[in-house]
Length: 75
Image 1 (cartoon, rainbow, N blue to C red):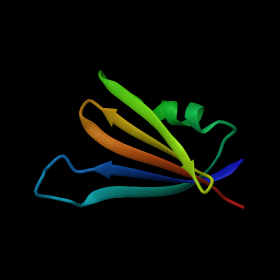
Image 2: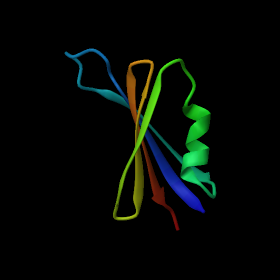
Image 3: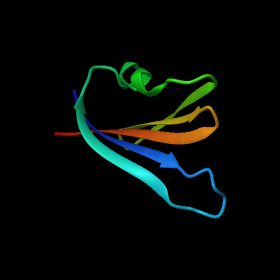
Image 4: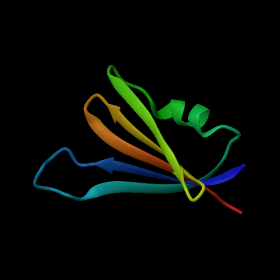
């Protein structure tokens, strides 16, 4: 299935509310399996959030750096 994947990397500095945002179109059968390529580090937590209007959201913390991956079905 084709997805639009949005990867948000949150800034660790409390005074800076900006975040890095990357958007790409991907094709995969399982978003969880696709996500594994980004889960590299010593301490990793990953929580799948409930689908919102067909969007699959994963909140991830890798070695203290918070990220969010959103997968929306693309037609």
